[in-house]
Structures are given as C-alpha cells and as structure tokens.
Image 1 (cartoon, rainbow over the protein chains, first blue to last red):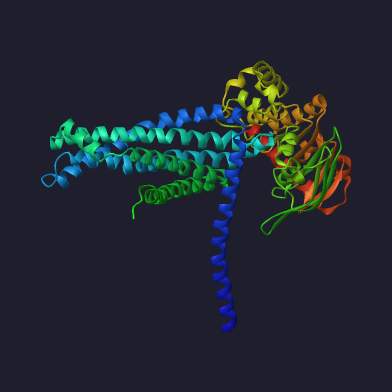
Image 2: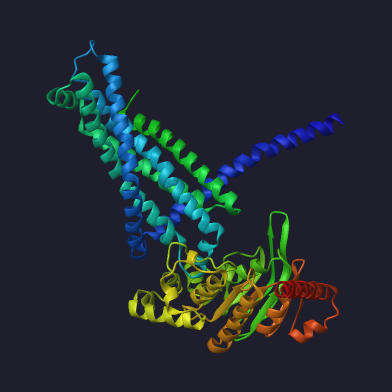
Length: 268
Length: 259
C-alpha cells in the first residue's frame, strides 16, 4: 500500500512539474513562430501601412493626456522630494540634475510603459481575444488573408512608433513641471536648474531613455498581441487574456528595465 | 469536387471525428446534419484548412488541403466562401468594408469602383437594401448579420461555399428566408456547397444530398427521400427529435397567436 501511495505521489508531483514546463515551452515556441511570421509579413506593406497609421493615431492621441498627466505629477513629486531631502545639505542646482536625470533615465520611460501596458496592452489583448472567440480571426483566414499582416503587424508597428515618442513627451513634461514646482517651493532659478541639469547630463542618457522605450514598446505590444491572439473559451477567456496580458507586459517591463540598466549603464 | 477521406480529429481525449468520408460533386449541395457538438463545424473547418485532421485526407479542387503550404492554402481559400455561424463580421468595419474584404483578388480589391459595384451586387443577391452598406454590424439584426456574412462569402465569386449553421438562432420566418437564399445562390451562382445544420426540414429543402454525422462517424448519406426511408436507428432517432421540436415550435407559435 505504502509503495502504491509513494508511486502516486511521484506521479502527481511529476505531472505537477511537467505541466508548467510544457506550458512555458509551448508558449515560447508559439511566440517564436509568431515573431517569425511577423518578420515574413513585413513584405506585405500595402496591407499593414494604412492600418498602422490608423492604429498609431488611435493610441497616440488617446494616450497622450494620461501619459503627460502622470509624467507631470512624477516631475512635481520628484521635485518636492528632492527639496525635502537635499535642502540645506547640497547646493540648490542639484535639484535640476536630480529632476531631469530621474525623468530621463527612469521615471519617463518606465511610468509611460507601465501606463501604456494597461491602456494599450489591455486594449490589444481584449480586441484580438474578442476577434478570436467570435471567429473574426478565422473569418479573415478563410478569406485567404493573413491575420498577422491585417491585425498584428499594424498594432505592433504603431506601438513601436508611438511609445518612444510619448516617452520623450513624458520626459519633457516631467522636467518642465518639476522645474516649475522647484521654482515655486524651493525658489530655484532657471539658471540654477539649467546649470544642474547640464552639469550631470550626458548624451548617452537620452539614447538610453530612447532605447529603453523601444524595448518597452516591444513588450507592451508583442506580449498582449500574442496573448489576445491565442485567447480561448468565450468571455471568460477574453477576460483572462486581458489580465494576463497586462500583468505579463508590466512584469516584462520591470525585468527589461533591470537588464537594460545593467547592460547600458555598466552598473557594477 | 470536395473529398473527405477517412478523416479523424480529436481534442485532448475527446474524439470528434473518427474516420469520416464524404464526397461532394461539383455543383452539388450537401447538408451535413447532426446534433450539437458532434463535429459538424470541425468537419467544415478541415475543408478550408482552418483545422488539420489528425489523420486522413481532404481533397478540394484536386489539392490535398492538409499538405498545402501557407501561400497555396491562401490561394485555395480565395476560391472557398465560408459563412460563419454567428456571422463573424468585423465589428470595427462597416458592412461595405466587410463585404469588400471578401473580394479576394488583389487587383479587384484595390479597384474602388469595382468594389463599390460588387458590394451593391452582393447586397442585392442577399436581399439587403444598398443603404445597409454604411451601417456597422452592431446596428444589424441577427438575420441581417447572417445575410451580410453570406454576402461577404460570395463577394470573391467562390467556386465552393461552406455554410456553418446558417439558420441557427433565427426565428422560423428568418430561417426560411436564409434557406431560400441558399437555394437561390446555388441556382444563380452554380456553386458547390456544404451546409452544416441541425435543422432537418431546412436541410432537406436546400440540399441535393444529406449526410448524418452521429457519434463522430457518418451514419447515413442520401437524398431526402432515402434518409426519410432509412431504417437506421440513429437516423430515426434524429428525425423524431426534429419532429418533436417542430411540434413544440408550432404549438408555441399557435399559443402566441391565440394570446
């Protein structure tokens, strides 16, 4: 009896360990195939370019307000905290450096990507998931048309074009609002702010911010598109796909943030 | 010609099709009957390659569908119109844009004037007014959505038409309208059609031959008369159930009129 019980336990844990491994490997394989299909689909530019422009307009204009709002508050709060921590211990122009560097290096790209993971990622996953469960994707295939070029490529390319641009707007807004807040609360002059900002600024910082935003754009678009495209089982499946997409994209952004910082800034 | 040769398909432990074979001659309409969940739609999806059978072969126009490469499959699909059970219309596109997507020839698809005319023509073929073209799917009734789905399927002038439950979810009057439409398209366009349905009377009306799919296998194939005369227990059981359903529907409608 004991031997049978032990065997059952081994089987149970064996299966328990195997299923997640199969799940992860299966998804990795399907994701890779999807990326290959997208690269192949790039040749059909006549199909996806008009749809890309439409998507870019939708997500660009639609996201601008919330991105700038969050960036503005981030700049203001950074400015107030800088005042709280450094006033009296460091020269005032340091505030210019802290605000601009924090926005460009971290807050601008990461906050923008996280907001867009919720806004664009959820939208992509829900749209594609609904199209999957209502057979719209099958309908497209049955008409001899590729869902990759009609649905996925326009969304991914639009995100990759728009998200870095939104990040740069967010950086600028955060810095301007941060300066105005510092001016009001700390009495920081424009000359001091500019001196501090320029003193610590390196051209690599902007490139770093841009590279990060491109990588985040990949996570915000590719992951939700993949998850929505493979959604199953009705409304519940679409709901699950949307939640999974937002969580996966957000976690990927944080992981990419750590990896890119390590690789590009050479932090030892 | 469409040939299903001994196809089998399973999803996890559920055997959906087990050695199904069926021939559909050019110009013929075959109705695939059977209870819900028996694998009728799966059979239909193997014909245009949306699903691959686990074993067996599907031959359409002399091409072995499961072995086709992506480009070849896209080419073949442009000759097959597919009418989905719930229409599967693209929500964000107007009716005209939906139908235009059905024009599978790239040159014709880019020709604005041709597309406008073709959309009008397809709407006329499915008895819809031209002003429906500018509406969105959300503004249409269930019957209209089905008809737009049919218009999209015929827009590319296909050689084959596959209907997945064209009358399901419709009231008897609208179901009759759709059945009439299937008949008319068969006569006017001369297409080879497979109609998946669980509606016996509608299937007998539109089809030259009827096949009954029962417990993952084709149980009977023949003309309406042959099916009605069949002594097979599954066929009789299925026909009796349909008769009971018809009586219930008739009583229901009498009750409504009486009230």
